[in-house]
Length: 440
Image (cartoon, rainbow, N blue to C red):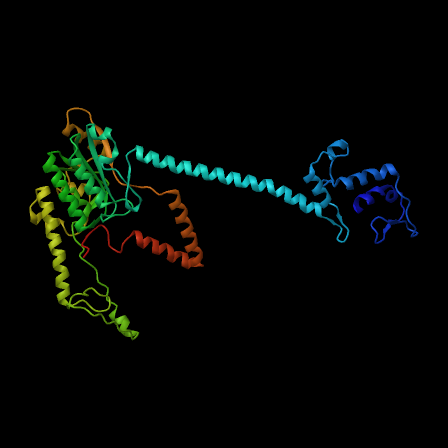
């Protein structure tokens, strides 16, 4: 009210007279001589009195606003008007704080409403995704893989004549983001029980992998051919080396792209790192208690003995003989010729063709068309089978949070670099690829 009364004396200020003084009584105004200033006319004071009584919070209300609009309030408005009376001790108005609280409340309700709607939409998206997965016959397995063997795809593909394109991609091991051993074996067995499948075309893009897994797939494909009498062809993608080529040897006909790298016929049986001298330099001694003198062979804390070297070399030689014999039988090449080729090197598509390791160089689409003509005398569908990695929204969010936390924990550029290096090691095992390796 003090500010409003000061505005009421604007004419006095404009007339050049000294600014009036205010004593401790807010309602008392003194002129320059120290005498009480004349009271305002009744007409001028009425608006201020009515405004104070009504407890109007908004001081910027237009002058032309009808008077009735300032009085049409309910009991809650009146209560707020009373709380908006001037605080004579501090010169502030508590109504300002009440007004701020009143403004925040609707925004909070809107935020809660928006969050509720967002949760509903997110839930609907998740439900629709799950329904779409079930409608397409998709099955979920470990490591976030989406399994698509024929028995899960649909009744349409189970009864429709088709050529199965079976994708073998990534490192051949138990399971990873692009490869799954259990899925692959189950799919081959399911296709063997499906009369509408007229053959399998392997699409191989793999640097190799485990001896056990490669041989299991190879033997399962041989069983498929024996049980069904259907052909199995192989198309080699960008890289079909070592264990990847091992699996391709189960095919009756091998086609490669002109830029394919293949071969790498050889075996890695193990790896030994000896840090015993380093430990000795720093006075560190490690003692391992075993039953059997070779139980802890390949330990980092002691050198490899000649006997242990012979043991590991025998493992590698046996796997190598098995590999070369399979190549010899599949490609109808003398074992001596295969042994000369099988020194672990990789070959280009043209080199592989010249050495009899493959049958043709062509495009993938052409390989599909040629196999269809070989299998049937009428058009058939082409169905691709491969495990797809699907990451849920929750997994994306959690992976992002973990990555940010780890980066912040690293605390420096070198720490972040080490974090990246550790993640790369998880994806790329410390094996020189292309490789066909034995895991004891």
